[in-house]
Length: 87
Image 1 (cartoon, rainbow, N blue to C red):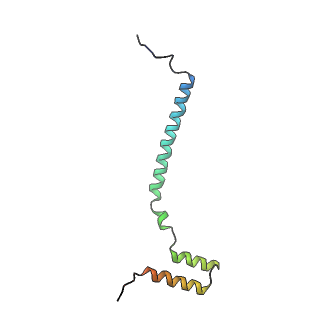
Image 2: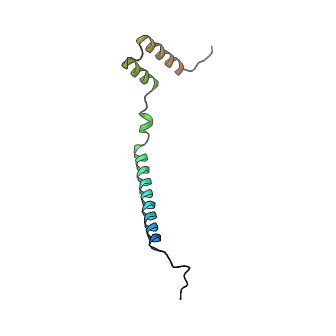
Image 3: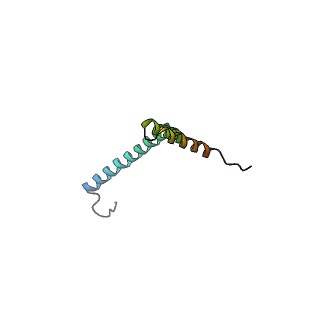
């Protein structure tokens, strides 16, 4: 003979168990999909970022800065790219 504590699970218990199991598997599947997308995408997002020179060229092309300012900023960018070495 088995002794049970209480009347057992009611209909709400079964419903809660079903809903929680569906949510659990939905989270697992969503996590696997997100992981696969991340691994397939790889480092494309890092290589897609424009360089400072490209951003400057885009600003010049849109007319946000004039030619003199473009050349001055481009010179500054290229000078800072080289390390300073004292003679």
